[in-house]
Image 1 (cartoon, helix red, strand yellow):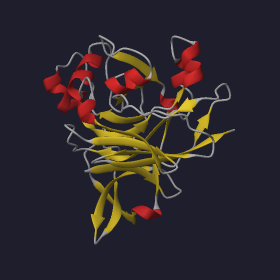
Image 2 (cartoon, helix red, strand yellow):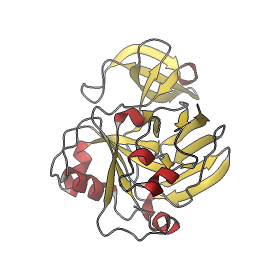
Image 3 (cartoon, helix red, strand yellow):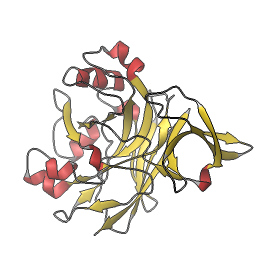
Image 4 (tube, rainbow, N blue to C red):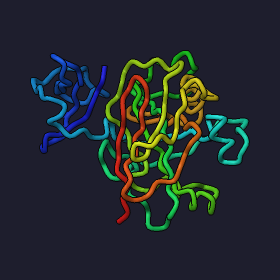
Length: 258
């Protein structure tokens, strides 16, 4: 099931995206599926006639995992960490499909990072890997935009990772996804940058979510970014970046400088 958040120019609502007679349609929902049962509200529209928004805005946080693909760690000139490397992005970093990613004024070297994102549905603390499926709503595409020059200048990565618009997600939440070997990649203006698979993750989703829950409490709507394959590259203002994950779809964002 594909859960989207969208607008027609009025208040945003959630909906289920489903094909009918060869056309993708969106069926509006009453309430927020994170907190209420999935119940249609009678709205039915062609997907092409709505504007998709970030499928969830975290009430709390985005937890990111660094260097979870060996080839990416190698291209960054570093070893694979013995313990999972975690950092945070604020919810103000989150934008949706088609929204511009704004290069911060203090950076001249912003790069893309295609990532599988996990959307948390229920509060979770100190859970085991076997319990992880019970707290996940689904999965979406994410792009962990990073100011590399700022990242090299400081240890905490705050300016590098936390700037506004640095975490596009979408186009929707897919509730059922085969994580064993899903292709994940990115492109810039149609030119392939990254081409990997979730099979290359050093730590899988159950292990990551469990370990994060032992550090902090995960809340409904929290997002976990699970790392990026090799091939990260700098993007320039005026370019368009795609992140595609097999079984989910494609997230597209323009890059601008203001």
